[in-house]
Image 1 (cartoon, rainbow, N blue to C red):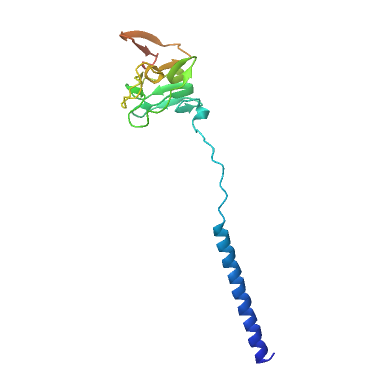
Image 2: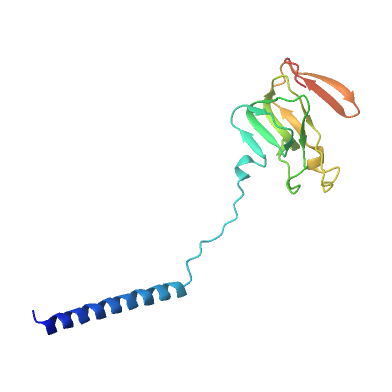
Length: 169
């Protein structure tokens, strides 16, 4: 192959590479100019499956932190590790939620039974001051299915303490 032919071949290769680069650049610019497809935004409530409960245990629920802000349901037993475990409406989180109802009653705790030597109190405390005193959030209760071994004693005006066979209250 002659020197002139090699130079022509080299020039053709360079021109082809430049045209290819230009085509790629044009394609990228064209792609950037087209708006990306937008997904349809659907509202999704991750707690909807919980029927309004903040937490649901498919078995036993053992609560061992300082307090519970919201409502809990357990298909099994409910126990605490504290002698003063309050169920409250709001202390640090958002007070903008509704407690679930069971058989028409607002509920903070729902379980098959209360076990263990710990204690819990449904106080419905609301540090935000935003719930009405007669609202479901202010009047929520605890519901237990199995009361075997549980005794009740009046402890004051409108306050009844339940004690289980293990000494939990």
